[in-house]
Length: 282
Ligand code: ZN
Image 1 (cartoon, protein in one colour):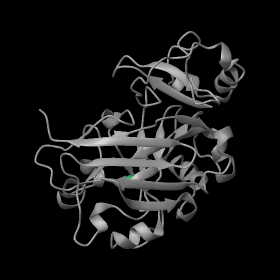
Image 2 (cartoon, protein in one colour):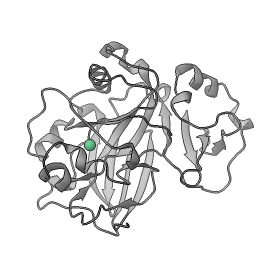
Image 3 (tube, protein in one colour):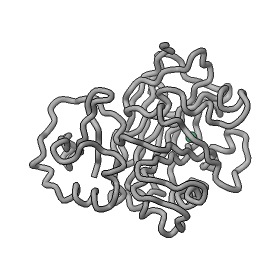
């Protein structure tokens, strides 16, 4: 299933994209798409619905984050060997884990706002993993059974804040608008192998990132298992799993986002995001 939330910011309704690609309203069935709707039983109940009987939504409403109520937004750094190389950093012996503020989450096509005085805002297309059931010290072999589904993520990053301002990466990762999710939450039954998905990002129509999840250093199963050794993963938590090569920081000379730029990004089977870059607004 492809689950979505559509409508004005803060007023989104739950929906799904049917096999013909039409948006169907789920608000008569569930109140929202959030932690309470992500367990296997809840998703199975949605899967049993006769989608043709659900109201079709007319027009092309804005899509919000396909998931409400995200408790933790966890990120993995340097998880593609060739991206680590372009960043000039060694391949990590263990996954690098950092947090993105949940207040940065927004819809897939909402504008991305440069932070105040930002000169080094950068892009990162990533596979997002949505946790469906509580995971605590899970084995790698069991890890994917705790996953509700997947979504495209743009892990926007302010490199000066991340790298030059001291301390952890988190300062450059959680700025407002730095977490577009979606367009869809694709349930895991539709993506039995998360380790073979093409992914890409275009800046102003030019392909800058091109990769595949098969070149991850640490697999999705490994990451879910690994993170669960340090914190309990709960339904609705999101883990974004690192970016392939082609970020602006790695270009010679580096390229960073400017007002008026346009990003388009996507992952095979998970849909596309389209973002305009806008200047800071207080
Ligand atoms: Zn990232």
